[in-house]
Image (cartoon, rainbow, N blue to C red; front, side):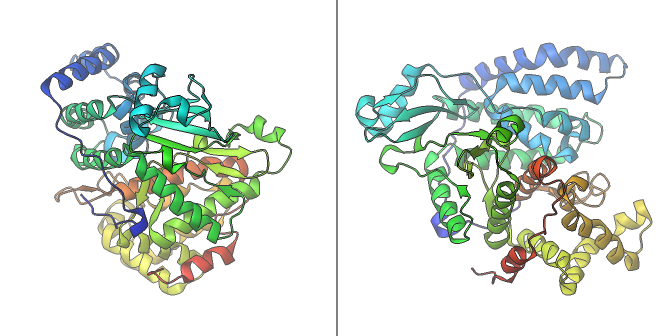
Length: 461
């Protein structure tokens, strides 16, 4: 698997050791999986074996619904599927973009037991009150609103009881099922499944320890404050009540950034706020190669005071030094750096030169003009006119081994799954949606001075 650059020392993350699941745990989860997948996919499999045509769109829809019912690791896998059309095909990837990371509430008695075990004290000593009805139910954790004895409003994030056992069993089952599934889908590439699952295991092993999220929030809050982006807020954590399975943080009362009607009711223009979020993300990515790996609309809360809160820092993206330099070069080139254009086109020629000649009839001499005509508009035209994720999906992802920049290798070489690149592409997909909502007439590089300052920052900073 591609090795990504380690985060800064203050962001040293501690992965949870996911033990091999017991045979009993796998059996129970396998039964649940079969009950969810069987009724939806069974008739389609039979139809295919009988020679009848089964549209990929139908297969995608039924698989997405089954994954939604299974929750936990399947929901996380669905996010990978949505951003990796080279593995499972474009129609399934498009369908999985509608998969929501939600789950059922956990009985409050079990939540109380986890909190009291983690804090070592009775619940009523930690909180003046806590709402037993959760305000958020995701696949890995649930969130309850509470009030501290000193009157502060807080959000209490608790990992689901038994989630580690379920994740371990899910990963074991997926390693058997997914290669078969990917190999039977038009446009799919089963070679990427194993390294993709290794990347998913790495992500979940970090996400299951909430102390990692607390460290990440503190680090990025300081970086954003130092950059003068005062209209962005990251919740402050309450360290004395937080631990591996519980994270207590400042409660931010706002509305999701894609709730257009609610945003309009605030009576101010959200455009500069959304611009600030995009700039903050590029700042951390280009400077240090680390970034929030899941800034979807539900994690961006517009506040009534004109700021935006960035929530849910459990997934941290990390780029290899090579990928970060490629990203910096693309930005520098679009800002007018001719030497950066040479480096960008040299990389494209090395990686895709034969494919461009074979599939598109583009000679080596024509590649610089082709690349500039492809990349420059994506960065300089308004968001409403571009597909930003194309920066890293490759000039022809199907021809380039089926994976674009998310996977590397050829049809005759071992293929790798770059988790950092996957998260990068996923985030660019999110930014495309926000851009079309609020920045349709604004280009990514509209604030040239801001990006020039980042690019000018020495790599070691």
